[in-house]
Length: 153
Image (cartoon, rainbow, N blue to C red):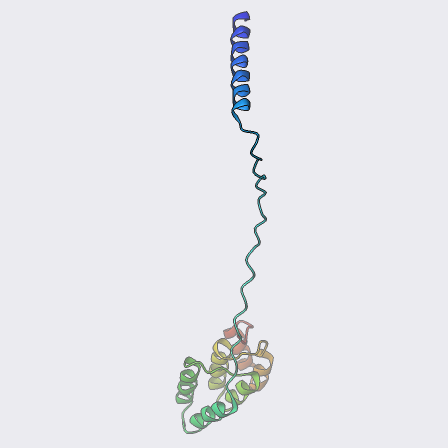
């Protein structure tokens, strides 16, 4: 054990001597650089929300209604509406109501309302207005089920 203490004492003396030499070797005439303080990282600003799509203007809506009026069959009317929506046509709740009422049969009204709810209505919460436009409760339930209670972009 005495041998270990002597070895450790030698190691300690060597370390002290190295420290003393390093201290003397340092040039104290030059000032020490200021300590580097880490700057807090600012989180990036939240992304700006995308601009909400705007409903069709009155002239474009009137042109769509004219196109629908020229078509006789419900399926053809649905295709006109699908093409318009697929081309980026967006509507507000009142426009959607007008479009849905343009269909004669409940099945066409439900199809039109479903399409509009899922892809074209820009005003949120339009489902109550659209369901009220349908004559039969079975059609209202069908619409609610198809859109899963969500209507509007």
